Amino acid sequence: MPHFLELLSFAGGITLPCFIIVFIGWWLRYRTIIDDRFIEIGSRLIFTIALPLLLFLSITESPVFELVRPQQVIYGLLATIAAVLLLWIVATMSGMEAALKGVFVQGSFRGNMGIIGLALCQNMYGAEGLAIGSILLAFLTILYNILSIIVLTVAASQGKSRIHWLRIGTDIVKNPLIIAITVALIAARLNLQLPDILAQSARYFAQLTLPLALLCVGGAISFKRLWQSSTTAYWTIANKLIILPFGMTLVGYALGLDGILLGTLFLMFASPTATVSFIMVKVIGGDDKLAANIVATTTVLSIGTISAGILLFRMLGWV
Image (tube, rainbow, N blue to C red):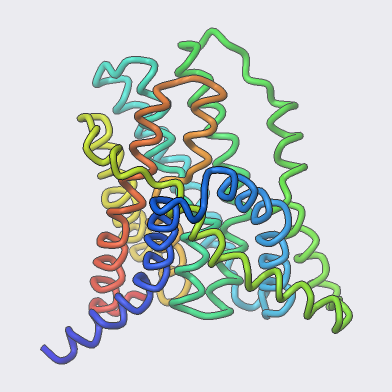
């Protein structure tokens, strides 16, 4: 019993600090201390400056090439592709209407890795976890963007609309996160470091990233949406928080991943549905109310599922 309580405390110590800040963000928005404009500007600051700097520093200041294993990244990519194909087949065979299909598939696989995922990796494994999570984020962000555009476009047009591959490629190349990680990997390989003054300034920005990002996530939550769930929403939430992350972790362990590699993989896959998934549905087409509901509900419920996963896999000695 004392060992179980120790593990429970360990799991809570990883997830609770992150989600306390998320709920503080919701409270600040509820009390109108922050508003939609704050969330919009804060999110833009995070995406264009603060998070890229955090990723750059986490890679250049860690022995990233010693920590990362190609098999982890390859498995993460292949598992994601397999999951999307399976989800699409299930949605098609169940007769799901077009407006729901793309939202169901994207909401099931696209997690908030850049904020929730990285914060959890840092809490559980420190700088090493953040570095490994950053590399996973780079490859999965590219794949997520491609897969999201494909499933939403095909679902919205029922296969009649062309997918603009050039636009997808341009968006990926211009993505600040991809640019930061690419430059960081080159700098790390060449053993290049920022001058001390610039490095310290960058650290100030980097330290701002996760607290501000978590506040913005919380400020965007609408608890009204928690009571507007449908059967499609329930299945999407179950896929995102339970079926896919636990299933992928189980298969990853069977293939030989363990320790920090398996742990960071679970934390990234178990992250709640990304807010950007709602934005993409609004732009490309689909049931945007369902998308917003999925984002809000998975964010609230993920505190329990992630804590349970950490507790379970720690008891098994996998992570």
